[in-house]
Length: 141
Figure 1 (cartoon, rainbow, N blue to C red):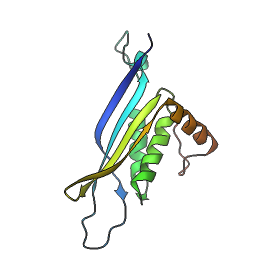
Figure 2 (figure 1 turned 45 degrees about the vertical axis):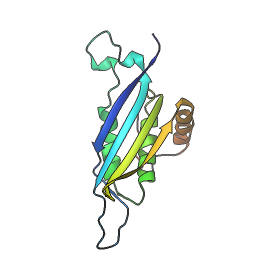
Figure 3 (figure 1 turned 90 degrees about the vertical axis):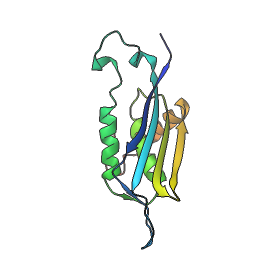
């Protein structure tokens, strides 16, 4: 059977610092990540209750957490780029939607969203093959 499935991860708290704020201003201290990962339905419609048959997202989450706390980021865009590059290393992921938002900002949240279709992920994978992750630790899967 062919088809698509989606793994939804919403409101993941990232242990990171982003931006530079003048003294006396409220700096956003809550950074939330939403990821929607498209995978083959074969990883969801499984014959047995075994991890070997599903997409194990725990290693991906560990890598995202490591990237988030690895350094101070100036922009949300760069952190989201690094997260998406790690996702692209997982061949099981055929498309994705990623949203990173920070709070408090004017009583709400402000964020960036990125949607990559399969052809976009393939282009990103080709770029990833040409260049290593900036901290020298790319995804291996």
